[in-house]
Length: 245
Image 1 (cartoon, rainbow, N blue to C red):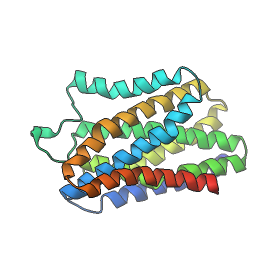
Image 2: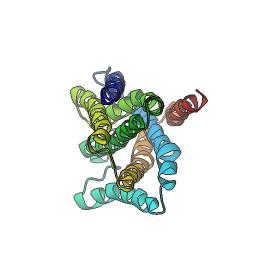
Image 3: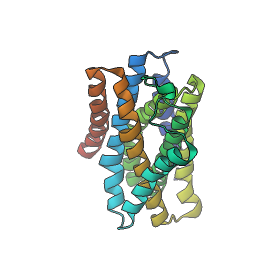
């Protein structure tokens, strides 16, 4: 069963790399392209947080809203105490560019989310092949857009194309670790898993609402506004396909 779970995990990892590769096809993305990808990224991240992660967290106990707040405040406090100011554009210029620290913060948040995805896949396989496959489909449908989003953020933060693709690959790697863990220990503390999910949700809310969507407005285009909405639609459509299948 572990071999099957890892094989499915490799498929999700490939999907991450495919998505991140799509985001780096342009060697020097234009201002409008960068703003558009940041807008889509912000919409997608907010959809992940508001439509999946927050509702799932609230169902798992009264302490989870606290951890959602912790996730949000972690990024805020990084800005204040490390003087990163992720939402302020370098040099005061109105350009859809992100400081390098924004890429690292996003990468950490995405890896936490995909680690939890891996835990879900591994635990699902332990519960039976049918359940494991259902969870796998749910995860897979998000991985190409997730790879695209993290690579777009990394590129917007000034990271190179190789680093952006590597960020997508890291999501696949941490998913494989998450898949293996339930098989290795046979039991994961539900509280700690739920807390990680809630913290990631709060971080995603900050990244989407406070950082990415406002920065996308530097593109000065109504089409970019529609791309923010499209980020929501893409995530919602994937979940609808899962529930209707």
